[in-house]
Length: 390
Image 1 (cartoon, rainbow, N blue to C red):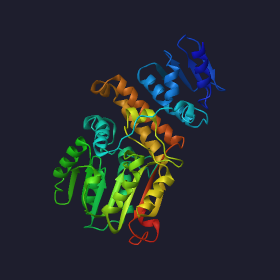
Image 2: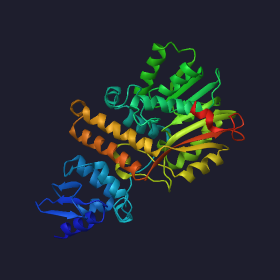
Image 3: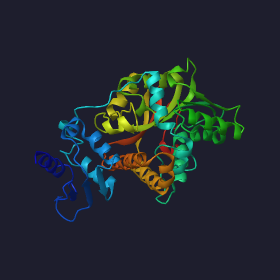
Image 4: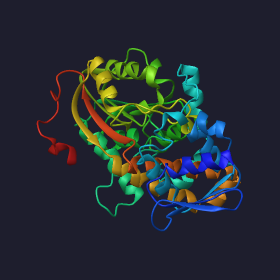
């Protein structure tokens, strides 16, 4: 009886949309006014102690293990929880534990490989043909994902105002589309860095296939181990979320050290317009070691590193749309992925993608592009922003 009372109170305060809940005893309650938009079925109770320890982990694992079923949009349900002031996402009573965070070089390599080395065949099923695993840029409402990812690559490179023959370092180069586009279309000499063996193998093959050995190379190395080399431009997409709160300042110092005087960097990553934060379930199951820094936190580290800000652009709605397309693609290949992994993995990954969409939709997180200079801002850039849109 006490358990049921706890759940009724907990769930009735967690959403701003009408929700129907069927409990393990077969009884059903509706919370909120109007017709229910989502139906939650609790096949068995999750221990109250687990929810109090960390509700995000307990509920996420409950869904993975089929203790919880959701009929309706998971994205809409999680969005409503983010938008509800006293939900489990915001109430400190339900965030007593967070997975331990380590970010030395050994731990960083393990963290990256646990996510990105799930296999190129896996990512090929639901990413676009450019194999770009970061926020796309939808210049037009009807852009497909491939077009939007190519848009994003050009949008980033154009902001650098790149001059042919100069050098570019791409920290966290993924499967290489940005760095190879910079080499082929902008005539830059490029170096990519990754800790993922799968990414390294594919980028190496792409360099050979495109006969770019003279102007492009990829390194399987921690970005902190590049020595005293410097480049004219630095790009880093979806990277600073992985370095950890304690290493964020050093990350931006490294970016500054790798830039030549008056060099320009474009840093693109997930941030928050409030304080930095992490999510227990995501840290445990999806991105070990992940930390989403706050906007002012990022800016202070940039300034402390001796960098100056030339331009700042938020792209939150673009990432919401990107993750929604990824989840749609993922579901189209659900049977193949289930054979490749298992059903629990599929439920976990679907929850992850929809939770990301919800987090962007609610404004809980944002994604921003920071254009930075090593030296007085815009010294080597045009005086107006029009050049970025060429």
